[in-house]
Length: 88
Image (tube, rainbow, N blue to C red; front, side, top):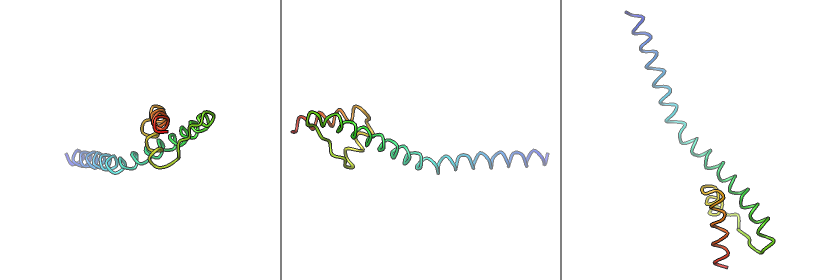
């Protein structure tokens, strides 16, 4: 009977450690996803400037454009290009 209590306590401890780890690592996963998406946004904006430079469209690389391109991906870059073309 005493062995069962020890195994139960160890199992409960492992479960609590796994749950605590997931709770503590979630903000870091979000941060890394944001950084990754921002890097992809920078690359997409660079490609858009490379291609759009031939027709006179240039998108500045700033925090807002990088985050829009990072969160929305290709549709975000297209949205930025359309907004830039409409606003002059």
